[in-house]
Image (cartoon, rainbow, N blue to C red; front, side, top):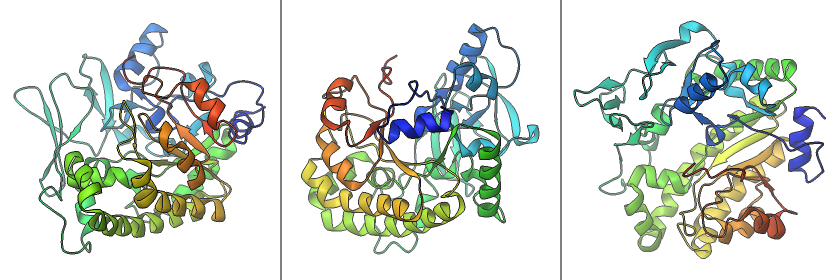
Length: 358
């Protein structure tokens, strides 16, 4: 089987001729820049560069010779962007190793060794402490309460680090002709590679609530202000469906998998009861999956960290084809149990390592 055939066979519950391998097909299955540099040093590989394509999580974009060496079967369409040397600038990792940042990223180095990233209007939106390996969110636009309406939701979202410091290809989303360029580059990537192609589009719902209100406030809102939460989710869905429609039109017949994201679990269980998930989030997740399945042949992939065993029946009913990462150190997330109970209905992408502490 080709890599693409192997991936699709696994998702469709057909036996592939080997276990598919992923390294960096999404930021949710990526490798930190420090770990990547250490890997190359261990292998005595001196060619290429450690390029940090996801600056928030400080993730490296694996190079072609690494993908080949480890038999990686899936890639992110975003790697078709920022291919020129001029798109990058030098930086230094926390352990002193050299790396490269996107040319547009200019964090401010503070006297104490920390870094601050700002929105274009000067708002402080993200911090990385001295010696840190990722950026923390520092701006919560709805921290003091919800607005009277959501006409300016886009402006608020733009001050969240995940949107303001976005990875490729979305760092080019404002370029003239972006959707045509995305399609052309995705088609060329498919022509030149037999790996499965992933398009990463968040459409997060629960997480956007936590990004805007902060985790503690939004968790209380789920119980105390469900009507307000629904208004926010409806406004988010309007934006998500508009973006999803453009992505599906551009690459729905080119990409194999579309990755959604929403971290629904803690170490010990879901952030919310299944009842709350069914009321607030499941209908909207269903709408997203239905749109993809109706308008494309792409598989729907949900990244959700933590213990989500209690939500699995609902996630399956919502229409997700793939769940990632299978956080094995969390409660009720034993791979054998998950496979036994849900393996006929959904594909598990991950579970081969302890993603929290190893």
